Amino acid sequence: MIAANLSQQSPYAIGWGTLALINAGLAQGKNRSGLNWFLASLFLGPIATFFIVISDPLPKG
Image (cartoon, rainbow, N blue to C red; front, side):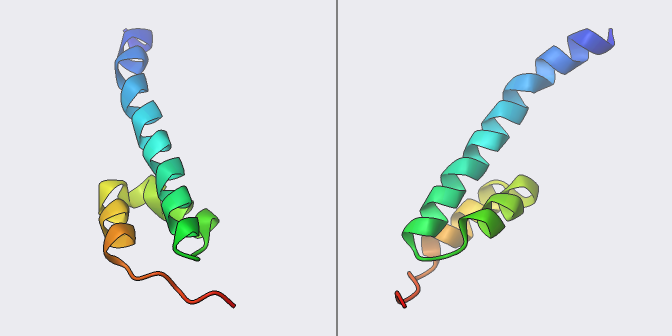
């Protein structure tokens, strides 16, 4: 019973982890810390994506 439950939740975990990696790439493209946004995305998921997308890029330097 436990194994069946884990196999049903696995696609969600894979999708959430993929979203966190995408968010890290988006953050780096806007000169922000990819690691910090990756970790934030593990907890916030799509909410973090929204904030990355609406934020302005930081100046390089």
